Image (cartoon, rainbow, N blue to C red; front, side):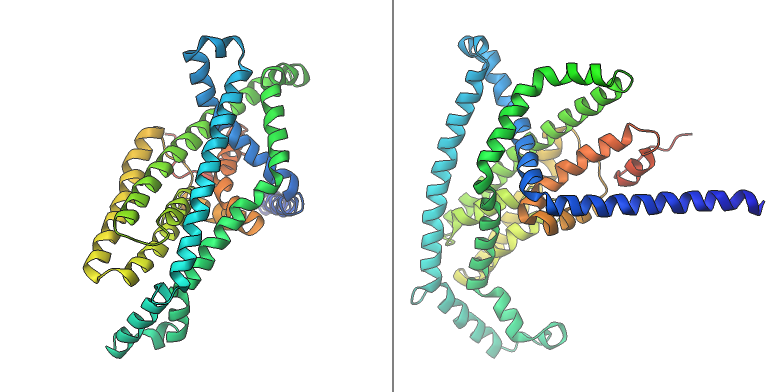
Length: 359
């Protein structure tokens, strides 16, 4: 009996060791090949994002159907105009927010005044237990919020320096769309059906995720921007843009997008107005995150919340905020690929949020 159990134990230990080595090698590859892999991942997401408008233009307009590449030209032109307009508005809004922070009687002075009044009212009896009062003040300071927003935008915008590489990848993905399946069928005739299923499922899942997430993030950010503008919160467009970007990060993104404008609201508004704005922001997140997005996508990610959290943390440590945004789609593809092989299916089941037990 002992002789029978020993090979099984050694087999499981070898499997765990091999899996650990693969994870370590994968991590090193992601870190050292970031200049190549990150533009490729962004290009794949852009490719899936433009497929829906491309199909719409081809089906709607006859001249586009005769020349399909015209659809990509239209999308590129409209997208470039949109990005340019948003960049100009964002730059002006950031500039005015910085002026509001540093101006005499601005956010920094208002924060110091309210902090001093609250400290004199003896409302901070727990700060000695949690952390120092100076630490709390530094975290809530408008200048810290300004640095936080600037760092995130700078990290996301850093991939703009690789846009040429991204554009090249997108062009080749479009050109390879028709010929690649045929080459795969000839090269891997025995595994082609499985590869085709993986590609089809991945394409459908990523397209659904990217389009639904982009739509809901834009809707949520638009509502938040209008709320902040109406309530007179400085940096309203800046925080709306951060909401759109951070909403792509599951678990933590919505929270990170809400905290900065809420702190600013507590500084510039009276407590009742700040509470009302906070309630409206939470209601906005719940509306889009819990109702509109699941109904729009028709399915949830199907990945364990713990796995999502670990994915966000690891991808953020490797590729920064941009990595946290694109890490989830990569995990979706990985889970689908693992699920199609009998040997790796247990790993896919462990990554899943919920599985159906076989009787």
